[in-house]
Image: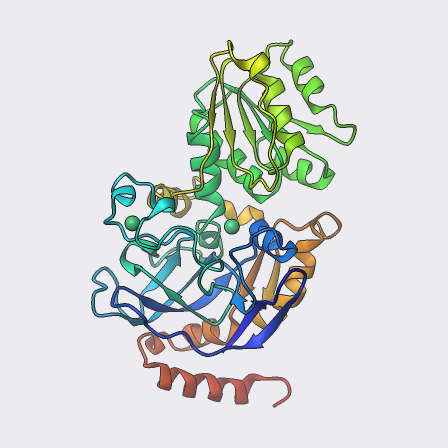
Length: 382
Ligand SMILES: [Zn+2]
Ligand SMILES: [Zn+2]
């Protein structure tokens, strides 16, 4: 099969890799129909994530169709259409029982495209399939659901819930990338009075306005904190969400949080930041950090199916799996390309499913034969 492979900082290629095989009885093999690239993948490409080693297939988001299941998978069957969670979890350990799936003690957590091969491939092995996959209802739009693997639950759990956003609150989100925009979209469940979005990219701020931001602040001069204090009559904000992962954006949060307010950190930080306790010690604030647990994914799935949440608005570009290298170039130059989320389709397989729904549940060998037949009939080169 083909896959996007990391070969050390700055080096990636679209390689032929062996098909994944079931390793544990709780595994499933999923044919990926659609996947995407995350800001985290760009961090990996820069060499920021030391756990990712040469030869790793990247990607932790996607939807697909189950091709094989281990003997102890009970919630799913071959042929089921599933959403892949960016967090794999056993569902049985102490942390999983607390709903802290990101800290699964049995080898789960964020492992896809990190410690094990990920979803930017034609097929992926999903450990703990019962707890790490979600069934997709028949009427659902696949592309919207790709946004549910990571960015929507991350924005909602790490930004909105950790920030304790309430009706009437004034909220500021520092960073209007896909994650910051996911915070903006899901914050509106709670009807805050104001949501101020801060970024250096005018296009992203225009998008933020369309998505419901009440004010946007261009931080080209680095004075976003002053502007927010002016906007709020020097009161500051009830909730400050850090959605970039750099010291200067965390500093904005510290400067603008009002007495009794909350700072929710969503960004992935590679450097230490200074916590200004000399100013904040008496201010009754809370600071929350954390990796997404994806416990809210089933709830978010319902809001997407009902149309309450429309995450497909975040999709700006489409590529096929064999254009994944180009997809990285586009996503890596997001400001110039005006890119938010890119969708990468495994064209052969999704066409197969479209043209022959009974193909679901075929054996791998039968599917390979089908794929070959499809390739011969469909590829422009003949
Ligand atoms: Zn991600
Ligand atoms: Zn666990």
